[in-house]
Length: 126
Image 1 (spheres, rainbow, N blue to C red):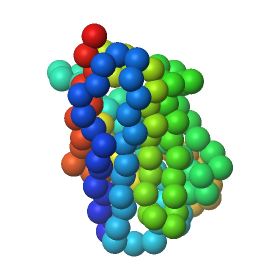
Image 2: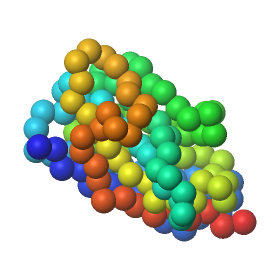
Image 3: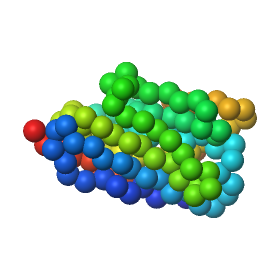
Image 4: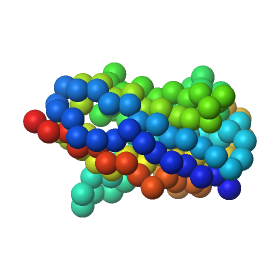
């Protein structure tokens, strides 16, 4: 079992930056791919970014490429999502997810992820 707790959400203005954190506990952080998904009201949960167990491989949704950066600190069992140049369309509940994997892979589908956090709200005003 892996427990995930997100933090760092809030209300910001367009153009601002925000960093989300996802603290994992319950089992070894190794061999676990991490990802961020988001869900806006009346929309489906969308992939945002993912990082491989080693941290050496990442993947991003086209809508956030160049603006968001995913990273992880294995010593702290924590994943991060640095969000720059935020736009109103980035407004959503952001979920952290974890997936036990074989190899240094980067799943981008929600069904690949076994463990989910409770979500943290990010609101970007104009």
